[in-house]
Image 1 (cartoon, rainbow, N blue to C red):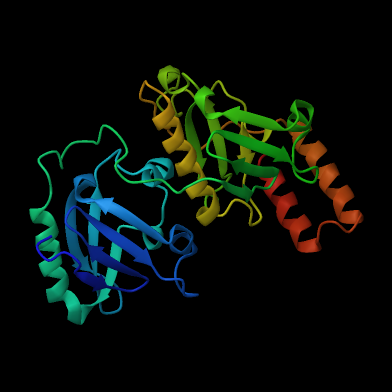
Image 2 (cartoon, rainbow, N blue to C red):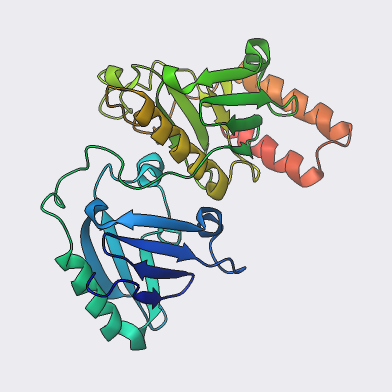
Length: 305
């Protein structure tokens, strides 16, 4: 950037331009997406960008977007294309009357793109959210201290398979990647992949994610936590997944990747569904689950049959 220290203020975020990077600072207001509030700020090296776009936005706005190179940002790698447009940290929304100024900065950014801009990045160029981190899933509490991931099961949500397996700890050195399925989609979850799982991605069929068909469902897998009923929100579980993925890549000498997240999946065992509905009914009768929570979760379980 020709003028180090230039600032472009938009809606929910401000971009501060430096000689080799742009610092994105997110607002803390109540209307700011919670993912942005969680991230607070991010420094994006110009070397991490592939292109820059400027397009008309909604309600008299324009949108300046810095498009990252594939593989450059652990947050987007973990998200796997599941982020809603409103949660895209690379978009800066400005009033339409600032369109000329936005166009100037778009041109300035394009001039700074490197010779490898059209190529996937060989390593992460954007820093991941820092550990320690934790969040509540529906069936347990997930924690990450920078060297290992831990799952501590909740008796109100964890399946019998997870209870039998007990609480889990996973050293980063033994992991090969992370699967994150957004809690805003049906059957969201976070799954830890063992070392070598990404290399075994030849097993899937054309309609099934490679390397996924042989694994058990997330609610039965002690290497997974499942979302639902407000648990595992994007602003908590996605930065967590990105931090774990970045640590895995940094720890391992052989490049690893996130496995594709399955959109569908095999139906649950009816006997297991019946067991969980009975358990849910016991919690409801004991007053530990509200009427609304009971109805919503029961409908969710029945839909899996």
